[in-house]
Every structure is written in C-alpha cells, then in structure tokens.
Image (tube, rainbow, N blue to C red; front, side, top):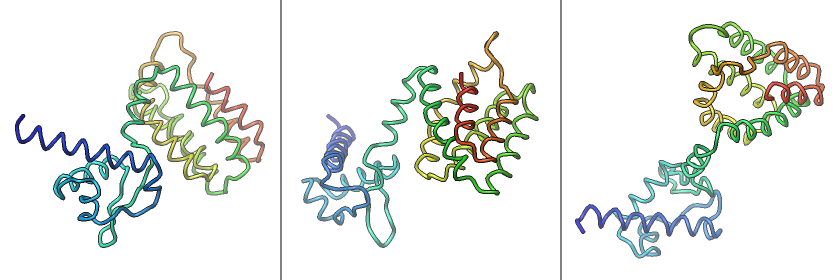
Length: 216
C-alpha cells in the first residue's frame, strides 16, 4: 500500500470516528470539539490526519470552523449523504415529497405572511408567467421554483425554507425532463393566482388546496 493510500485510509478512519461520536450524542449539535491536539489524542491519530478529516467534514457541512474560536458541530447528519439519498429517488418520489413540504408551507404562509411577502410573491409569479412557453425551459423552471420558494419562505420557518431550497436543487433536473413530456399537464397559472390570493387573504385551507392541485 502506497503512502497516499495509507493516508487516505487513516483519514477515513478519523472521519468515521468523528461521525460516530456525533451520531451517539457525545458531541451534540452546536457543541465545540476539543482543540486539535486533544482531538488527535482522543482519536489516536496524528494532527495532520485529524486536520484533514475536519477539513472534509467542514466542506460537507457537518462541522463549522470559527476562526479564533474553534470547531463546532453544525449538523448531526452529513448533508452530502442526504443529497445522494435524495438523488437516488425517482422523480415521482421527489414530487411526492415536494408536495408534502409545499402544501403545509402554503397553509402556514397564509397565516404568517407579511405585506412584503405578498409583493415578492406577485413579482415572482409575474416573472414565471412571462417565461412560460419560451424556448428557455430551464429559465422558466428556475422562476417557477423561485415562486414556490417564496411561498415556503412566507411561512417564516427557516428550517422549512432551507429544506425546500435544498430539495429544489435535487428535483430541478427531473422537472426539466417531465415538463417537456408530451401529454403532461402544463402549469395552471390560474391555480398559481388562486394560491397567491388565498395567502394574501389569510385563507390557510384554500392555500393548501390550491397548492395541492398544482402538484397533481
């Protein structure tokens, strides 16, 4: 085994050991990890190996390095693993999961939206409508997802917003394929307008119903 392969395997072991401690709750969300020398001693690894493992986990979003402060646990699951799991699903599964998020978000948006949210929703819907039917399908999809992201953002739940933003990246490629399929129902902008109107008047049930109809 060459030096590079050996180094890589040691880094993998360090990654596994850090993840196991996070998964077990030994290092909880938001907790600061021990300083590098102590961490290397705990793991029984060299400081260079530990430093590389921390770099990998920081890149993937599990850890966060705060200059002059230390390294903190940012997530209890590896976002890259989550992305891979989502990518393995079918477009039908992705759309089902999207519907679960959007319908409840629309209900919350009707109850929590601000006047500024309504302005941004109108602007996003107008931009989406203006691009429908143009040869730039990817631009239309981006603007359509932006409108739905605005709906989710209007629920004023940062976790829900981030989840949907993350999820939208996964389903975008699938939407480019399915929207252009012959015979597939095309976007119903009247339903989009009904959704916006329901959110504006604070009708949670109507907002959820309109959003659900959009995703059938």
